[in-house]
Image (cartoon, rainbow, N blue to C red):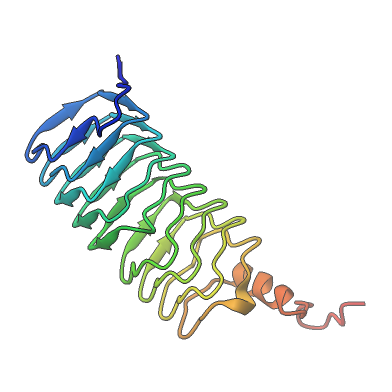
Length: 206
């Protein structure tokens, strides 16, 4: 059953959920304010249009959860694991995020603007349509990820590894790439976005 309360004050304020285990709990249009989720394990829980204002997530595990159109203003996320989660439309842009561990999942249309996510390993994650502008992705590994239509203006991909990921529609001329690892297909796409054409040896492209 979805937990849905209509109150003028936050539904959950200053509550201690640390070390708790939640399974298949559902919340819609709720505000969690100043709550502590440290070391909690949330399994197959659903959060829709929820706000986690100034909440603490340290060592928290989200396992196969759905967090759609959720926000984390002034929240602290340290060593949080998102394992196979659906994050569609959610925003972490106003949160303090470090030592993130994402494992697959759908991060389409999320807003991560300006976050420093350096050295994070992303595998089989969809960033389709996501707002990744000004993100710090230095030293990140992106394996089998999908960046189709993602906004990456002024993002830093220094020493990142993009090999095996889809990059169609990425605005490469307006992001930082230095010692970035790419594969041949990506190289051709990037060249085309810069106005060049790959013709191959012995082919003049006419």
